[in-house]
Amino acid sequence: MLTLTKYEKLNINQWDRLHKTSYDLKYPEGHTIRDQKYFKNKKILDFGCGNGVNFEFFKSLKSKMVGLDSSEKALIKCKKKKIKQIFSIKDLKKLLKFDFDIIYCNQVLYNYENSNIDFLIKFFYKILKKNGIIYLTFLNKKSEWYKISKKVKNSDFRITQLNTKKYKIKKYINWIDEKKLTKKIQKLFKLIKTGYFGHYLDKNDIGTNASYTILVFEKK
Ligand SMILES: C[S@@+](CC[C@H](N)C(=O)[O-])C[C@H]1O[C@@H](n2cnc3c(N)ncnc32)[C@H](O)[C@@H]1O
Image (cartoon, rainbow, N blue to C red; front, side, top):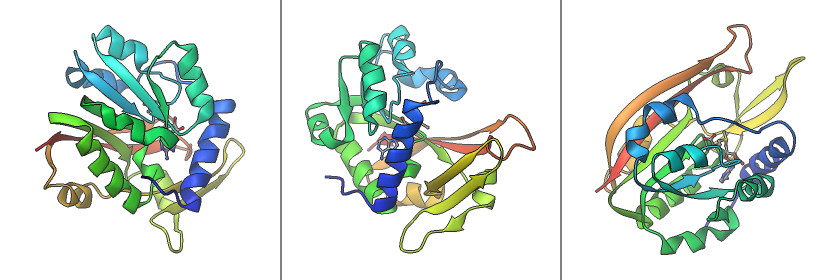
């Protein structure tokens, strides 16, 4: 199963702190709504589901959602929303009994080192139906956060440290290369869509200027 490195654990702790304080999303992200054709009438694993923000949306599409997150605080918020099937990453093995139509993994994979991303992709393969889908999104190198990041020794992460009036953040990000990932998993999955979106809320605000990649794969 997953063996977490010290930087992965730091990311998890940071997310747990965020869930305790500020991070409480109310609506699914725009690309999730635009890409709703993938989520209709499906059995979905929301891997890194946070507070369960997508639950009502998936339900409105007549889909059933199983959620997983690393943050205990986020899992409590999911239970309050009466989401029945909620798992912690410590319980990853329990997902082996499922066969999902789609795994939705929105802005989560970059919290992992490459070896664990490889492990998870193989794990996703095991718990997906034939022709099942993985819908991945992650930060890409057009983000301001990449431009100011520094390589972390003995790790696949780069560190971005913001010390502005508004943001005091130290974040380890694995800047996943979409071409390398697609090539690496081509025996198991066929790429069926590449897309991009950005959050450019304020051009002078480095904390919110981020660019993202969407990759959608179908199980071979
Ligand atoms: C950017 S939020 C995305 C939340 C949700 N997927 C969405 O679409 O809004 C990242 C989520 O990943 C979770 N997370 C962080 N590290 C994780 C890990 N190693 N494994 C699983 N989830 C993780 C965080 O707790 C957080 O809820």
